[in-house]
Amino acid sequence: MNARRPVRHGIKAFAVLLLLFITFFSSAEQTGDTLSVVIHGTLKRKPCHINNDGIIAVEFGNVGINKVDGERYKQTIPYTLACEDPDETVSLNMTLKGTQTAYNSGAIETSVNGLGIEILQNGTPVAINQPFVIDYSNPPVLEAVPISSGATLTEGAFSATATLLAEYE
Image 1 (cartoon, rainbow, N blue to C red):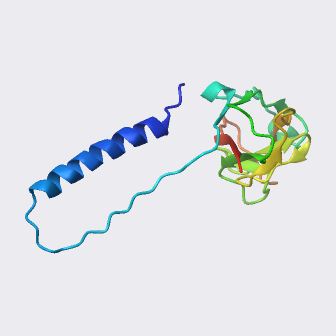
Image 2: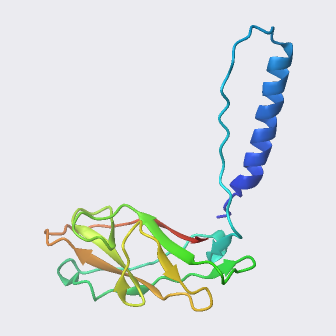
């Protein structure tokens, strides 16, 4: 899946809106009214690309309902990190964005009630939706492991979705 670059589309959209704005007001009768214009955007330092802007898939296969213990079924999250013109003078942050479980700040919710996927950075739980500083020259090992809230799990397929983000501070 190719990610679109919103900056290019943003510039085109801004140019079209500006042209429409100028056209509309150049033909409008002057009435003395004022109009506030709000323009906003985001400037980013040199961009980083995770997994070449593609999807990262972690497959757990068959997970035993009574064997979910936060250790079994642990999988390494396979990803690559490439930043354009890395800047060692500023911090590089990584964030895992997703819906955090109510029972574990380091786990994302799955489609099965009571089942979460805990994310580990070099063996330590990552707080979901909270940035953490990483070393670009030595990116962290990320792992995913199924955990239970203690509720009785039901048999069936499960899925979870999150976004991995790397950006300079």
